[in-house]
Amino acid sequence: MNASEHFHTLEIRNLTVRKGGVEILSGIDADIRCGEVTALVGPNGAGKTTLLLAILGQVPYTGEIRFCRAAEHGQGAPRIGYVPQRLPLDQDAPITVLDFFALSAQRRPVFLGASRRTREAARESLERAGVAHLLRSPLGRLSGGELQRVLFALALRDAPDILLLDEPVSGVDVAGEELFCDFLSEVQRDSRFSLLLVSHDLSVVTRHADRVICLNRRLVCSGATTEVLTPENLAAMYGADAHLFRHSHADGHGHLHDDGGR
Amino acid sequence: METILSGVFALMDRLLPFAFAEPAFMKRALLALLLTAPAAAALGVPLVQHRMAFFSDAIGHSAFTGVAIGVLLGVSPSWTMVGFGVLVAVAITLVKGRTELSSDTVIGVFFSTVVALGIAIISREKGLTRNLQAFLYGDPLAVTDAEILWMAALFLLVSAYLAFLYNRILLLGIHEGFARTKGVRPPAVEISFAVVVALVVTAAIHSVGILLVTALLVIPAAAARNVARGAASALWVSVGVAVLSGFAGIVASWYLDTATGATVVLAASACFAVTALYRVARPRE
Image 1 (cartoon, rainbow over the protein chains, first blue to last red):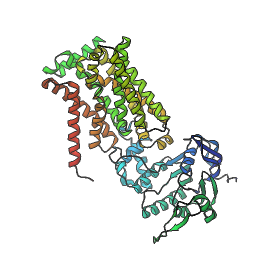
Image 2: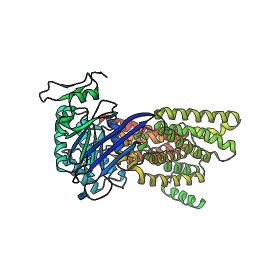
Image 3: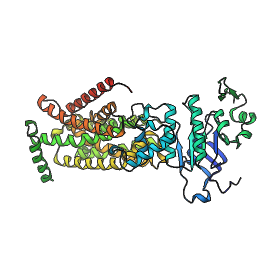
Image 4: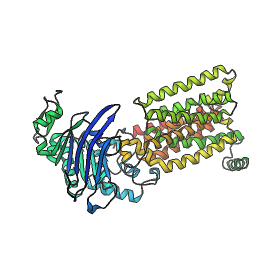
């Protein structure tokens, strides 16, 4: 499929990742288009995080990952933003949100203080994410939802062409998850970056993703969300006994439950 | 080199007109501590963040072998200790990055191996034990002028290194994958950090000895964690604790007639206790 020239795209061709003699991902072909939200779904161990790491260039792979920048946005390497799932940080770590922003923004060592530019940029992106009040909070004390927003604000600061989100709503309660997803769509609509998100939560995926890539060590299927998330494809991905199971939450919040069937 | 130090000594006479600071060996001890303890404490903050306390302990114990090799070869053990410490630091870091074993397992293997090797060499060479005593417990009163100049150079090196790489070291400690997307190259940062830690640990052994050297890196940083909220205050509190306990320890050891290195570490422990009390008493936000 050829993307329109108005879009940045990420073209993944015949991507294979091996680790210790085992193929974690084999022969993946996929396109990720700017202005769209692409969801990466699949069971545990399907290679979702590995695919993100391959796009980030952090694991060796064979095949091709090509970035095509839209004509009107000039040349150059893509800026890829990455929002990790969580930070393995203890509560006591003496690092504030502002410090965290400063670490990747300024040459001046953080023990000499944050520069004014760092502080202003941090406040601006935190405001955009609705968490400006967290500027001086210790990073280790944030709740799951707060941390998600801070990480997201930090990723936005650097105006990414492509933003990779690993499990953006894990560790966040249902209400927070909805808020975050609405916020995500809003920001994403305004900017021209593409969003690739890994998610276990199929209700998030059906509601917010334009396209879906289903993965289980190889490509199960990919395409528009409504066409792809069929019972047959889910069964191929998660095993025959899996169901899209809706809890009796008032908001119709749904999870895919893997009943252990293989 | 004599002239530089005699100038410093004259200045110290002016600043510290006390009985304890009169003898030249006390001035050397003070200089040794005030040069190595703050450097160790500054490195201690990212060291604790990276959970590398055991690593610094392993480097400290590698000095056993470093000293033994020096005596065996008939060269100054102070310098073979530095070389061997750096070697072990690089080896641990390289192996850690290339295996699936957890880092404390890798360090444990190296730790035992170097200590065993040191003991094997010592047991073969009679008369080596006395040589080791000074390194085991530390003796800042016996520090030579050359060693003090080395400590001063190291102080400058650590300052420059931290000014240049502190942000990257800390970012790597928060999340490796994320740090990589911000242009941090983990192997380069890890190896350089390990080497700098090894240099400081082997220098600090002169003051507090093999057994206690990790204390100089870990205790001030731990005390700083009790009171600091941000990255800037964490580093400065840690350095402050090191300067304070270095000075207090050396003065106390003069009047109490106790081992200097151990007294300095006890002073640092007292600082930790005070900050811990402050932390308990402080209302939680």
